[in-house]
Image 1 (cartoon, rainbow, N blue to C red):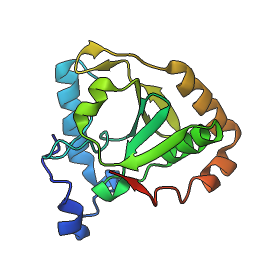
Image 2: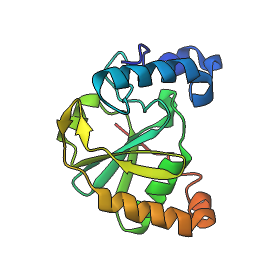
Image 3: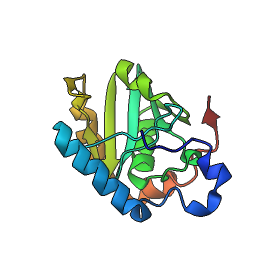
Length: 165
């Protein structure tokens, strides 16, 4: 748990919630805890159990043929790599949504990815247990982003106006 409510950005907007560079100490502490637990990344969630993001990356999960990511109004970074992935997926005919999702929904996800620094990474383990993962999609999305960087970024700039949930 990140120790903050999903309402914190509305209650204290001056905190610059979506600026990961300002969260360096918390992010480093999270990675130390990951190492202690034998993991290489963490998923932050609110005090209400709503998933937020990873310390230095965005998060996308798939249920069936639909893809989901937490909405930036939760006080998280509107990630460039996540926008690029959604642009790629929509070009492949998939539906992609932003919303407020309970972190427990990841237990039923068909696949999970983290992304940052223009790279998509499949999650292979969750809470120490192996999960289904889709490495092929990560490879295809990464190749697409490298080949079409300018077009993908331009197409993904205004996409989260509709919030699911």
